[in-house]
Image 1 (cartoon, rainbow, N blue to C red):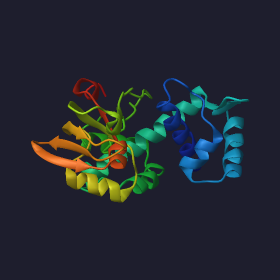
Image 2 (image 1 turned 135 degrees about the horizontal axis):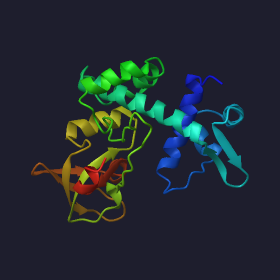
Image 3 (image 1 turned 90 degrees about the vertical axis):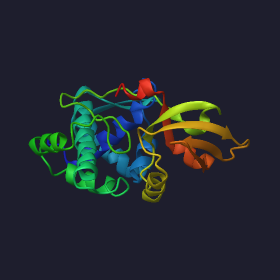
Image 4 (image 1 turned 120 degrees about the horizontal axis):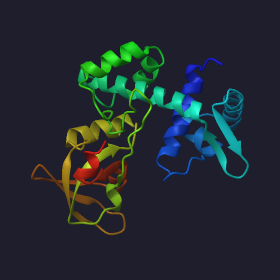
Length: 227
């Protein structure tokens, strides 16, 4: 069976959902429908197609999970997408808030040789502009460990690992603040009842809201450098 771009997108999103579930490979079709912004019947139809092609399986009361071939297709799609994003930002100088949708489109069109050239021109990056790990050419996904800044205690030091949003306005705003993957920060104070957080970035004080802090995933510097 030829894997269409739509099928690859479903497989990639299924993989992304499972990736951060602490070794739980099962995901629900309702979660898949939510991240893809499609209806439940549309997910059901696609799941049947992918199941008949051997790309995923379903277990009652547990959910769906990717087979080995489904995971391989998902990782190839994710690799293309994240390398295209990196190329658009690092080589073509687009803003990191501009590239997600274009990377989806271009990623479905370019071949492996073009992707390899993009990877080289971008300097063989390990993460996409938003901090997500890039699978290797042989289908290995680096494992990263991070948590929301909004859950961290005051008086601690962190490195921004990922920015967990595709919202262009939020990304653009975070970029103006310098809150991008790889940035070191000190969480100085946090107000109670989900109030604002006071940060120190490059010796400069900065205040952000609790909601915005929730999209900033942070880790120790040692953990950040693993991926």
